[in-house]
Length: 200
Image (cartoon, rainbow, N blue to C red; front, side, top):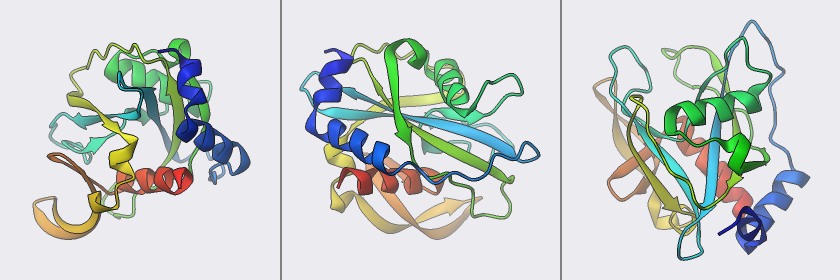
């Protein structure tokens, strides 16, 4: 299925309109601050349903996001032209998907930042990207798993709940989204919640 088929899907068309009418709130770009960008990559499944690419990060000592379920993305490099470039470059490096070639940015969600003081001070810009259906994922060593989540599962209220998660080895109650065996919390949960609100 083509990119145009995805863009014509009622959910994606509504999402694109919402992103156009209400762009994400952006923190002023301060080059003294650390910046990162993530890509919420959407495609049509073979059944014709929009779905979102998610990854589980590989376990690495010293990485505060080690083992987390997230979407592709990472820190801005000094040579990156802008944060949109960062999101596409990181997606290519982590998954082998060249969004510059097969995707189209629909807009941005609100910038987010960690709420835990132990984490590095960083602002993260989420980009929503529509992509061609025929995507071959080639994960890098940074990615332990990758999978596609139907938007219908993300919109299912039963998937969202308060639950206990382990944070640096200690249990803590967090707002979560659960898909099969994958539990999403923290920054990614906040970003997915923004997406659900725009989808209605």
